[in-house]
Length: 307
Image 1: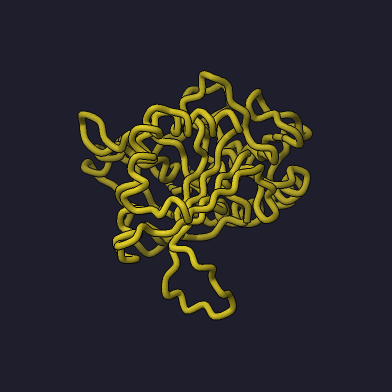
Image 2: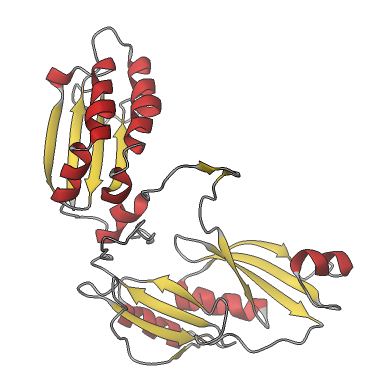
């Protein structure tokens, strides 16, 4: 992974506020417009000094920095050599930068705190924000999980994955969600009632919304061969540690840890499926070297940052 860091000085005649506004709102938007950037820029970060109240550090005399993470040296060259960068982005620099006083450092990134997935997952190389229908979705917010007993399920998720309670949408003393209107809104069968509803969080990523439903015939939890959603993946740093924890919490390991699928099979990778006490499948997955991509990739997958 290649990092480019620029130490910036504002153009003569600009106030600090004018410089920051142009850098963020104008130049930042131009950088996002580079077609090649959607494939090769992993992260783009701007920093501007201000009254932070920090007294332990003496800042250098610069008006800001720009840091870009690229997937490879070839990716950097593809972006910086692109027509959009040369004719649009670079052409904007004299409008807010003192180019003669700007310093540039380019080199290979050596993570010291965090891992290979942290930077590549911080900002995704997304396309436009809107289409003909309007604003496009941000991403996956949460997944739904129906369990036989919400308190027991919560204890398992706590013990196995360090899950945290966000809130109870429906507590023990609340009236159940039921009736024709609820059945229509949520696709419930006739006579079903949601008696408990809870949102929990495992580390960083989509939340898990759990439901406890009574008064309806329920099928067994899905197997990998069944249609529809069939498992939840939990990203871990050490599969062996995570597996011992999950089994101690009451989970059942389906096998010993094994290599991941292609594109997830970088050095040190491992995966193992664990069946929760009520039957839902959880995948424990470690990809310390990050994913690898070929020319068909339209985007890079999101990965939780290191703790």
